[in-house]
Image 1 (cartoon, rainbow over the protein chains, first blue to last red):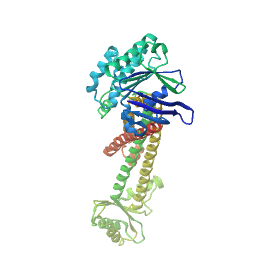
Image 2: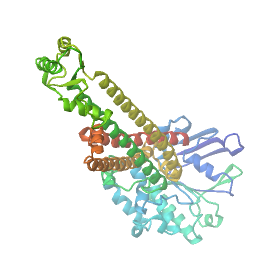
Image 3: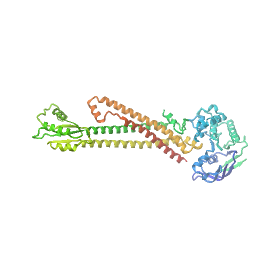
Image 4: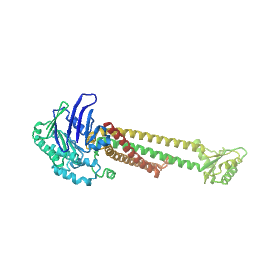
Length: 220
Length: 309
């Protein structure tokens, strides 16, 4: 599904942030991406999200070499990738329901088509009672669950999460990772979850992609 | 109400707007467009008023001629006056001709010579006022030729004065249009700056939309919808303020018209009534400003998004 071959990344004329990354991600797999701060986790996620292109090497996603794709095709491919951020990035003036429905609005679906799906998903993540609340009234855990719902509402094939547990307490962190695991198991979504919380990783048996000073090793 | 109308536009579907309705940049832009709309509408209304008045003056003056009879020794003025009236009345296209009485002629000189002077001892030029029924086909060359038979008679068609009037009105109209163009240019520049400010303020929204797979086309459409709304609201407020302005000036002029000085103003500028064409012009200004806002902001947004990506 995703293949990196000798991928390197540098910003401008700066030093290489990522070096010689070669790995493949199978469909329906779950990987933790970990490493110390500044190791390049966010940069790797940006490469996976197709928001930047590698300085060298080859990235293949869904069977296509992304370096040869035009902007429209890249946009279509990006719609198969969901993203969850540490800082939630919900739109403050929209309700929880409207935030979660946003990807479907962007796809041009009428509300009559997606209303039930969004409501069901909000129920599933435990926000059924909070769907009309603005983000400012949600707790950290609720915000992150809303952000996760937004990332999966359009049924992406790959779900990326950048430190999604960074702003919640350890107990809630564990519950959030269980939520990702549930999505992986029930929907068969490929998940890459970046975190530097080692105690959290120890609770799960998923393979770990360890980034250290721009170099990657995978521990199954 | 405007918001409800805009909700009917394609792509909005009545859902909550992705770009926030209320923002400092939005309010500033609304105020700026309202002012620009008011200035544009007042300028356009002024141009329409001047043009209407100029056409009315020109038509009035064009329907009237004057035959002037200078006193000539050996000629009998009263007889010459009767002949001039007869010649004028016999000319095709002339509705009527009337010689001003001696008293009327003396009254015409009063502003220059003062009241109370006895002018009976002096022979003064006399006038015959000729009203035309058909200013286009009136045989004025024929009348001029016929008047040559009367010594001291000359025909004044006021052509030079009308020419000056038309030139002045044309200059005012052109100046007004130039002012409109300058206001339009200033509006475009202000919208570009405001749009870029709004985009920078809403950078987070743009980023999120990009991350969830929104195309630049979609994002630009969302911002354009917001700016079209602001443009329409600003244009309508400015246009309404301009209509109110003309209504108030018209009322003030109406009160002034009771005095003699006011009557002079009324003769020059009419009753400040914009009429059908003025109101249509102001409505057009509102629509143009809304369209200008939407198109300019769309271009600025597309440019911003291209630079971002």
